[in-house]
Image 1: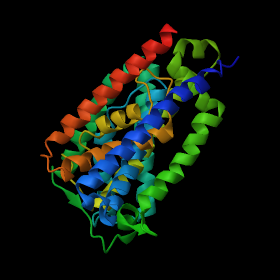
Image 2 (image 1 turned 90 degrees about the vertical axis):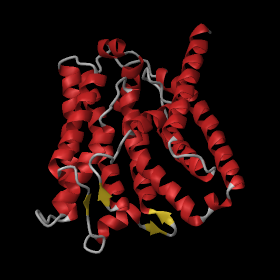
Image 3 (image 1 turned 60 degrees about the vertical axis):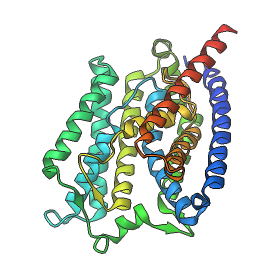
Length: 329
């Protein structure tokens, strides 16, 4: 017997309302920042915002899928650093592999990491927080050991394709935006229009009810972690191509927090069972614009993390109040 399918539509409606509110906030931030400093609305600045939003949204989408299924992944930032370092090392003179081969290797490694996370969490009944926290430390440490804590870079002339993927544009639109769209459409269809996708919502809402209904809970949760790691690897390669270098100690620093914040702003509940993938993109765009607000309002960049933390706290408080109000009806 299948879980009650009425769960997803009702929760998606709540998420849609939050997405609508976030769209309004995003528009307000863009308007106010552009009014305060017109340079924000320059073509270069907008392309930068679009590019960063697309890259950030990729790993945030993976984080959202995990959160919807009732889990969390704290290893995202360290995985970005490790995959970025690994990709550039494999492209370098010591290995000299072609980019398609490198993409297959780093994607396979990322999927392995995700499957390992899911297997440890489901097979040994470990807490997702602890498992992925361990990976955060392990992957960051390995990235620094592999490079002796030195920045790894590549020659844009020798690896023009990688540079184009990360920093190129098509008709004035950054290439990562097209890659995000190519990932968002099938992911949205999977989550909202397929039985396994609806099951992920059901698992996040009530894992015991889903299990008693015959849902293969462990298999689907492992899939969610594998998807998260795969999308993170794609983001890592694009960011490496954009920046043309990967500092192992700083690359992806605090990105797990950005991913969680963007997911929550986009309508995902940290309790699981609720969320909109399109909303995640809006949430990440809001975070990226907030970063620009700090810059264009001539504030110290030290405020970036503080503002992000305040935004996340506000989103969590609002989510808690909405949940309490809906349960009291």
